[in-house]
Image (tube, rainbow, N blue to C red):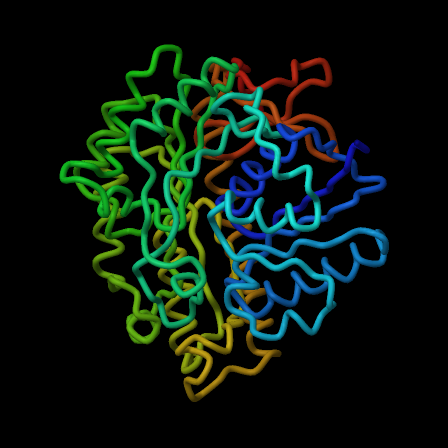
Amino acid sequence: MKTLNFYSIALGCKVNQYDLALLKKEFLSRGWRYDKNKPDLVIINTCAVTKKAITKDRQVYHKLKNLYPQARFLIMGCWPQVSTDLEKEAADLILWGVGDNDGLLKKLALTFPSLSDLPVSESGLLVPSDRSRYFLKVGDGCNQFCTYCIIPYARGRITSRKSEDLVAEVTAAVAAGYGEIVLSGIHLGRYGEDLKEGESLVALLKKLLVIKGLGRLRLSSIEINEVDDNLIMLMKSEPQICRHLHISLQSGSDKILKAMNRPYDTAYFSGRVEKLRSALPEIAISTDIIVGFPGETEIDFSKTLAFAARMRFSKIHVFPFSAHEQTKAFNLPNKVSTIEKKNRAAQLRQLSDELTSIYYKEMIKKLQGQGVLVVAEPNPNGLEGKTEFYFNVPLPPDFPLNNKLQKVVISE
């Protein structure tokens, strides 16, 4: 039987990357070959978090369709979950949503019979990765229902993976040499609420921290109301948890936060950040902020700028408002013009650059001459080391590129 080739690309969040890597493992275990040059099947795992994200999905699809005109295409992820007109893109598109790889493989086997074979994967528990850090998906779905977000409708309610399965996977990742494990999920801070009593993010972290040989754990995006005292105290007492949290703010105006259906106001947010920094003064706190949400006035935006500066974020990811048509926010009145959104985004990105520079210089000065553990990562200009504080430091060309934690001495 001819060996079949596939090529895949994930757009959007770390959960999408994990899901696609898991599917890639299934293809490889069935004798398929990963080949970017002449694929028989192209897989695109899509994002639909904003209207702009869907536009990018479509652009990537058309670009790859031009590159590989003879290939079949599988479009999966959030885009097919929320779009009703994808069938019009091409008659031979294979469409799938999220989850249920067994069901997906059965559907694909109608076109590619070799996918009905079920040999045991040689890679064991590990999900294949070309990254230096191991990304662990702890769950899927979201119960938040922010007015601008389509994800709860695309991915459904929270579904957490069993902690024993996660412990087994991290144990395998540690045995494979991974020095940093990144916990990710659509709603990471609510991990375990759908499982038996006693399961939670903090409980999971405690189970992972006792794994022999574990290097360090990093948490991906988390909500401020989930940064509770138990998590703060655990982070303070366990140096293996990275001194970095990504906590989405979205707006520094209480009026806009309410319109977004965010579960906090600025007073609560600042109070939790103050408590977090009191326990961990050196912690890096990055964030997401949306500009140009319907009804956001110049006064609202100025409040956001001032609040972001006061919070001393280490980095701000800026998103001009671009909601999906099926969200409540899409139909809200008092829309902000495209030009104004661009202007506000530019101002906020400038503030982000300033805050990032301040944090980086303060930490480099504090750590100068000290050895810190990094994970080596390639970039277009050479090698960089990812620190526990999330900022990168330059590495010499002969620095070993692998997935282990390695010590490097910080210099200016």
